[in-house]
Length: 264
Image 1 (cartoon, helix red, strand yellow):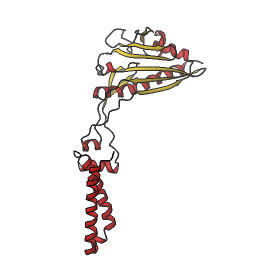
Image 2 (cartoon, one colour; image 1 turned 30 degrees about the vertical axis):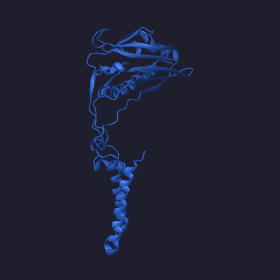
Image 3 (tube, helix red, strand yellow; image 1 turned 90 degrees about the horizontal axis):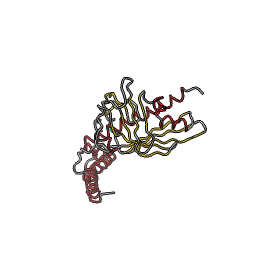
Image 4 (cartoon, one colour; image 1 turned 30 degrees about the horizontal axis):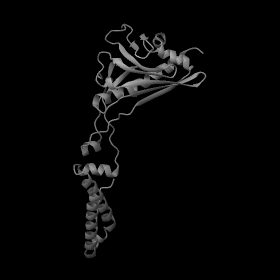
């Protein structure tokens, strides 16, 4: 919405500068030769003034970035590997908070945080019944996801996985999910109820859940879509969002390769 007061103040400033230049040009030919350039400069000054009046706390440099539409500098990110998996089981990287963009630094405004769901999907070359069994049975999970896995396929049941061949279910590296809802061969939703030691998202995990959709797209093809929800703008949740975004996509690729390797 246009701020009338800021617009009037900026307009008055621009008019005064323009009139002053025209009057001075009548007495000085050198100034008269600068009418075109001067007019553009005064328009820029008026625009800067409007933004400055609109956002009193914002510095002139930040206003210039906004006006000319300079692209933000890409966020610098530092990552470190962690010896753990996502809720559906893939090793990932923890994304550290990045440096804010130039515009955000200059203006003093916080960088926007993405709290939208994360979505990953692939098409599996297998019937939906087989793909469902790969997720919904203990033998199916062990065939592609983890060497140690079990699932009690009912609402309130547990899905437990351990990705260490030397580990056992129930040890400190076991990931436990609780089944929130299910529609056999169509949908399964889970929430992490116990994270492995070392996962730095213990608080953020309490607000997040995952929904897995199964959609037949032919007699021998199935689309699997994984949606992560419940992200918040705080730093821990944003780190977790990046972790699951990478991990969920990698998990689906693993499932895709599992069925691609099976004999026809």
